[in-house]
Image 1 (cartoon, rainbow, N blue to C red):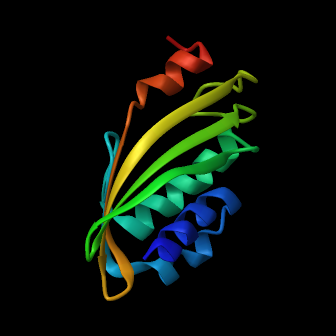
Image 2 (image 1 turned 45 degrees about the vertical axis):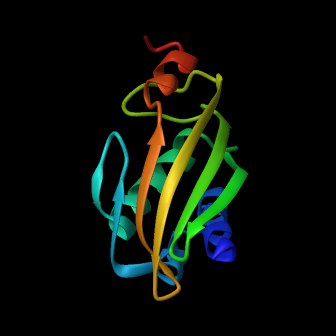
Length: 130
């Protein structure tokens, strides 16, 4: 289980969008404060856009906790320098650090659902856009 979650984090770190199908079920779901829907579709766009905006993006695993057989909690930290356009804003060159928690449900040795919790307003605050 933990290896699967580590592979998911690696996809974010390496912009390995083509590997999403290896870790997610075909009908997997993704939810965060900004979007909700089919995981592979949403994450394909999110990962690409995030890498365009933060070329040195890095996700670090703070902790992984298995609570029941098919449920994992991933505590993470993202850091990156805003080197590209971000939601229509020009690059600021500023560094962001965002922490979050993902509730990950597994099915048939793949990720079936992720609910991601983080304060999305921190991006704007740390980039000086507010």
